[in-house]
Amino acid sequence: MPPRIAQIRLVSSHPQVYEPCDDSFALVDALLADRSKLLDHHPSICMEIGSGSGYVITSLALILGSGSQNSHYFATDMNPHATKVTRETLEAHGVHAELLTTNIASGLEKRLSGMVDLMVINPPYVPTPEDEVGGSGLSSAWAGGENGRSVIDKILPVADSLLSDKGWLYMLFLAENDPLQICLQMRDRGYGAKIIVQRSTEEETLHVIKFWRDPDIQMEGNESVSGGKTAPQRGLDFLRSQISRLSFRETRQ
Ligand SMILES: C[S@@+](CC[C@H](N)C(=O)[O-])C[C@H]1O[C@@H](n2cnc3c(N)ncnc32)[C@H](O)[C@@H]1O
Image 1 (cartoon, rainbow, N blue to C red):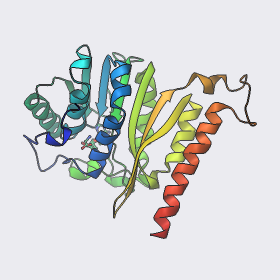
Image 2 (cartoon, rainbow, N blue to C red):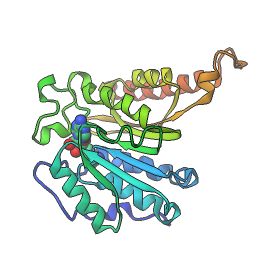
Image 3 (cartoon, rainbow, N blue to C red):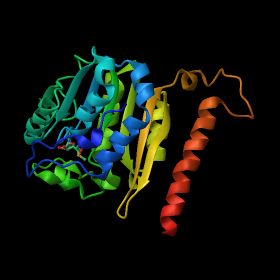
C-alpha cells in the first residue's frame, strides 16, 4: 500500500520558507504516479534542488520506502531557513538526507558528478523582473526572472552533469516557461522527455516532466525510421501535441 503522503506533517515552518502548494503537490503526485517504476529503478543517489519545507524529498523517501534501503538522499536550498525546516521535516518522518545550503548544487558537483539516479526539482518558475531573482526573502522561492527561466536555465546544465547514465529528472514547469522548448534543449543533450502530470489551477498551468538519457536520440542519425520518423521524434510529436492541447484549452477558458 502506498504511503499516505498527504499525511506528511508540517512539523516545522518559517515565514521565509515556501510552504507546500499546488506545485509541490503536483510534483509528489508525479512521483506517486511513477511509484512502481521508481521502485524498479533502485536509485542509489536521490537529490532535490530547492527543498524548501522538505515536503518533496521527505515524500520521495517515503514513496521509495523500505524498497530502497540503499538509497542515499541529498537536498540543497539557497535559503538557510529552508535547510533547517527540511531537516526537521525529514527527522520527524524518520528519514535522513545530507543537506546543503548552497546555490543550486555548488559544492556537490565534483562529488556527485554522474552519480545521481533520481533528481526532483520544483524551481522558482514565476515570470518576474530579473532583479527579484535570488533575493534573500521568500520571493526567491518563486521569482524566476524573464519567462520564469532564469534559475531553470542555470539548473538544467547542472542536473545534466550530476545525473548518472540511468538518471531520471522530474521537474516542474509553468506553461509560460515554454516547456516544449526546454524539452528540445534537453533533447539536444540526449534526453527523452515525458509529461507525467499536467494540471491547471485558476492561476497557472503546471507540467511535471520526466527526463531520461535516451540512447535512441544519440543513435537517431543511424536508426531505421518508421513512418518517416524515429521513435524519439514520434515521442517529441506526442509531447508537442500534449502541451499544445493543454495550452489551447487554457486560452479558451
Ligand atoms: C518553488 S520553491 C519549492 C520548495 C519545495 N521543493 C516544494 O516543492 O514545496 C523553490 C525553492 O528553491 C529554492 N531556491 C531558489 N533558488 C535557488 C538556487 N539558486 N539554489 C538553491 N535553491 C534555490 C528556494 O529557496 C525555494 O525553497
